[in-house]
Length: 165
Image (cartoon, rainbow, N blue to C red):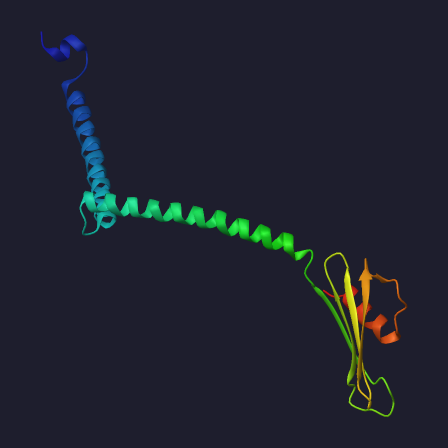
């Protein structure tokens, strides 16, 4: 009694099955060789002309640079926060009106200048130029309003500053 009789399968089917398995395995082996070749190419590109020790040095150097960047970030962040806190008291809004204070003078040598901070606090400077001299007045502005009555030019300069963008 032969093996094929004992199993009840024709020996030719077994050979064809094994041959098919060998072809599939050879195909898988070919794919693995291609993948390994790609991996080697990437490894050589990654390593360049260096060895593992110099690569380690490069990585340590980059980590130190990263630490420096993080430290710089926090330093810059604190400086920016300090500047932002100071911005509320700096003059950010400006209004300027040039005019002729007296009809006999030409060239609009007189002016009203309004300077306001974020809270609309500040002042209006009014400089009136005449033949006899230049007279300068300053009026305090609190929350966008003046306690002292403003001249038309001063009011116009204040309105420009309040609407400043």
